[in-house]
Image (cartoon, rainbow, N blue to C red; front, side, top):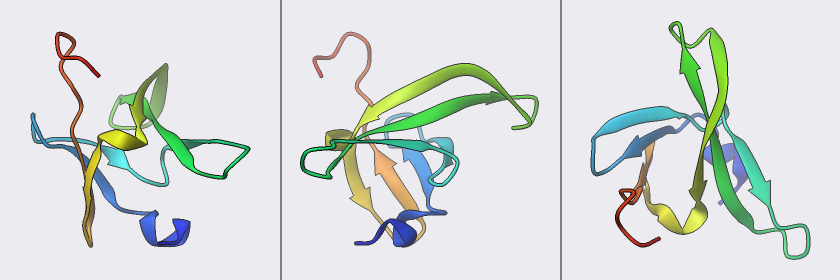
Length: 83
């Protein structure tokens, strides 16, 4: 799959059914040695998405459960669950 095919897909947390953002509004952390995507960096937005708070949610690629035609399903562990 190409990065351009991922862009624009909605990111959804499967446990809470919460929209986290769109891929394209996020940053990717890429392993320089092998070119693999390691982490999605999802910014925390406030004021209807116009201003970033500076915080970000770091989601390891291994937490992505399904990439569909319109959305990417992510399983973010609770704080008390092992990662």
